[in-house]
Image 1 (cartoon, helix red, strand yellow):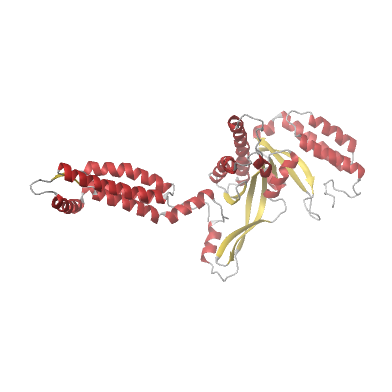
Image 2: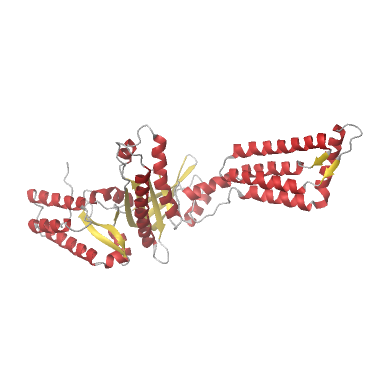
Length: 439
């Protein structure tokens, strides 16, 4: 389902039925409500003892009040998809209204017509049940658990026969992957309180998902602790910028979530856990198409290169950074964001080496003297490693460690590699990329 599609709000049919019912009672077209009241009057008069007159009381305000109060509750319940509660409350309200009318008739000799309002309430619940398929579509659009494609690809998927060969497209996308780091270790803080862990996870992930979905992303996967999203290449070429903006907002949102967690964590022997996320960003061509198996269709989205966002998100912890981006994305957005080169390595045996960058901030960070100094240090570190100047590389790494806010994980990584290179000299034709040794 395409992210651009809009769904029919599940509460709207019930609201329209209630509005029509109020208008019907007030306007009373062709005297229908009056005729119904006359039938009620005849039935109730038969119950009255002989000689006791029965008068009809104009009950339009009472009916409207009943519809506004009980109807509002029904609309809220239907919007929350609590259909059983809505049906039960509608029946109870209708029964209570009829019972009240009967009691007034017996004891006061006054007839309040509540049948029209009762029927309207039941019609509202029926309308809510009829809107369930549309409400389900709305939930799927908002949470977006399934794979999404462009409108053209979705149209192909709908029109193609089941027996045909699956059609595919090559799309240019910017991908973002985000996941909680070490969720199993985090769960140990909530041993015996699974519901508490789920509430914490939802409180962290739900705002992140809502944010990127509200900024034009397709959400292609969500497993509770991680998700993937894509921005399609648009005419303005801003898909990479949108992904970087989203990553920045995620990092800021996580900092606030940690502050709330510290304030709410019970005082005791158990320390308060720290929430961390790993974000990967990559831009490039993707293969997109619909795969059909046993009358079930799913959209497959696969990156052509090896530096997928999911992989970079997992690697982010290695460098002590929240967000790691690919070289292609860095090239697409480098004018407006601060990217610091953190590695030059081969991800898979036999593959071409790739450069990885940490996303450190926006254009203001990029223009700061501190960032330019760190970027210069990193450039000299990688040049020294390529030139096999191990001692010089160690000295530059030691200087970078002293910079305020420096990632000690990153410099521990490169320090250990220099030590490994000294013990295992690279070949003469070495290109400077780190290739993990085969175990």
